[in-house]
Every structure is written in C-alpha cells, then in structure tokens.
Image 1: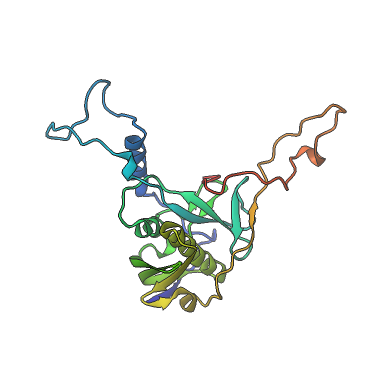
Image 2: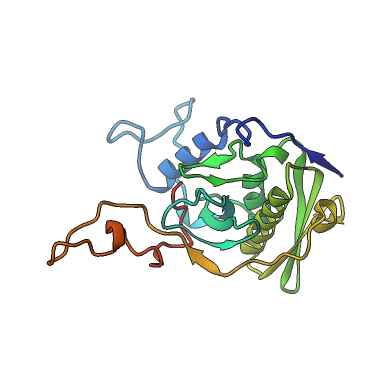
Length: 245
C-alpha cells in the first residue's frame, strides 16, 4: 500500500480521457429500453446466425455513484452534501448492470472511470488519478457497516482531494450495500490513516441555485426578483439524478 502524490497539471486537473465504459453503457441502454439496431421485423442473431437470447430487464439494476461538485463550480440545480473544502458530494446513477456484487460493481465504476470530469459545469471523480494503482478486492457487511477492501496505491494531490476520495468510496459502498455506514481499507489499513484524515462528517444537504435566466416583468413592469434572477434560496432538483452531467 502506497500513498502517491500526483503533481497538478497547469490547469489543476488531469486531462480528460476517453471513457472506455461509454460504449458498454450505450449498448446496455439499447438492450434494456427495447430499442433495436436491426432492420424492422428481423430477429437479432449472432455471427453464426443463431438467435440471441432475450434480455431480462428484471435482472438489471443501477448503482448509486457519488461524484463531487467542486467549490465555485457547482452545476445548477444540483443537490448534495458538503464534504470538505466546501465541495458537494452528489449522487448519480450508473447504467443498468447485471451483477451479483453490487458493491464491487459500483466501486469498480469509480476506479475504472477514465474521465476526471463529467459535464459542464462538471461533476468530478477524484478516484481518476488512482485508476492504474487502486483495485477492488472484496466487501462484507458487519451489522450496519460495509467493510470495503481495496489493494494498491491511493493517488492524491491535496488534502481536499483526499477528503473527496474517501467520501466517494464511503458513500458509494454504503449505498450499494444498503447500509448506513462504510469502512474503507487499503491493504488492510483504514483509508483515514493512509490519507491523514479525521472521521467522515458530511454537511447538511443543500441544492445549488438554478441556472441564471433572463428576468421577466410582472404586472408593474419590474422583475420578479432583484436583477431579474430567480431566488437562489429555492431548493429544486432531485438528489437521485445526475444533474449537469
């Protein structure tokens, strides 16, 4: 187990790379929504001409994945909880998957993700720098806690990023296991010890302001709010959706 410090690029972020899982997601969506890439009236077959088995959508489920909206770059109308450095931890959903280990699949999405940023303004994946060195090993539920075992190296560039890494893994594993708490270990060592972090504490749930729109005049010819903007305190949005993605 090693803690690797990864230097910042001049932009402060690693360059976006092509997500290898993108094609898998598209194909899964095609199968599960009943869409077809075959001519009308033709049954899909394999390369030998044999009929392909029907997909049973009931065997598929989506995994909750936790990403981070960075302080000062929040997507509009996005709900999350403050994790550290005034960043927001936001829940997204994976494409439907068929798996017998939802914890391993969910964490695997984060560890195998080849993009740091998703959307504009972006939700970010702080696990991206660790993708070549950190590997899922196993998980088990002990009471109301899931113990997530990883092996390899954790790459971080700052204390803020360390908090993001721990929070993403912790909440993703807990959601997949269906329990309130999670314990993350890398080569048997608690991730808090590796990264030098205090106990995980998340702030209250908040929703970011909606996107700015042109003001509309009401009956007296003035805008409904100062500057013609919507009230930034209005809480809208669904924490179960990937907003701004």
